[in-house]
Length: 454
Image 1 (spheres, rainbow, N blue to C red):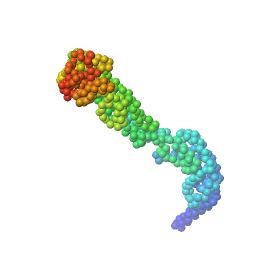
Image 2 (image 1 turned 180 degrees about the vertical axis):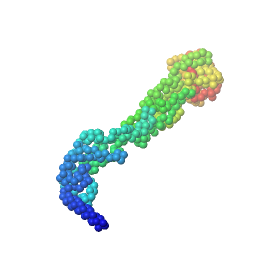
Image 3 (image 1 turned 90 degrees about the horizontal axis):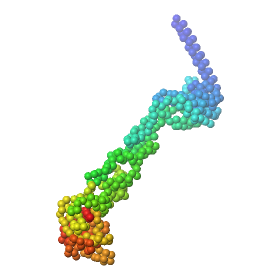
Image 4 (image 1 turned 45 degrees about the horizontal axis):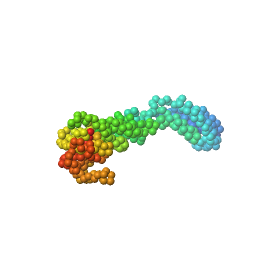
């Protein structure tokens, strides 16, 4: 029995050996012939078991020309042979055959060669159509980071849209160089032009935040005018193509002009309650709020550039005693031309009064009516010159109050005041005061104090 088993085993072993020898001699014949082994690829073409001539023909015809795409680890092949035309060198393909060892050939080891074609043409239009028809459709759109209508940051969205321009470019390069065409689709998803970390986006967000946090307050006594985010954001401009946020200041001048129209009192007609003559309307004079528009425009632009909250006043050409409907206040000098009398009120109470002599009633010498203000105080000086004014008078107390060179001062050369003296013997426009009274008034008067002449 044992001999019989050994005999059968020997027969089987002999058959196996004969089969292996047959396979060995068959493969040897293939190997030493002009035929490629199994699992052989050259420049994305399967040339397994083809002769060199057959391989060149197949490659030149782009027969079975596949591109491999990988998405989430899964591979997909797409035949693009209809979009490709190539021409290969017989010698270079034959050189690939010589790179096999016998045992690689015998055991069917996979071989993948890259050979640069002598010529290669890719029809991009056909290729694009093939790719769009066969690759997965996008499920999520790519969106760049941007600032919305309230200038708040909307972060980017990374979608799965394929950038076919980039993909086709790389495939074309691969075809022309004979490289292996295998691509990871995630590498070709369209990327957001801007992300929340992009330099321009970061700058835009910073600028928007700076303006949203700032408040510029212009103060007019108890009233205020605020420039806050609700106004500022109207003058911001966001360019989504560049992610650049700009702040425009063209509106500033118009804004300052509106403030001036609303709050200027300079040169306007005022209703004034006199001491003896009831309410009178007085127009003109150098006292009143008068915004210096050019300088205030510069001021506001600088504040906006600094992007910091601040409470300020406009820059004025002229000021009044106080803000509000009554900008004269309750401390002032009142002068009646007709009565030739002066009253001084302090905090609403009459403190001093005196008869005076105002300017002679001629065009050149009459005292200018209006709401003026004291803009200087001097002791012991001369007024006028003989060459120009025709007089030169020494005064101990000088308090100028308008741009005509008129002011309050003592007149030691006069012995009488009040009455009708001014009509024929009046001053050259100044208001003459008794010397003793001038000293008392000089102590009370301050720079900027209103002088009401009517």
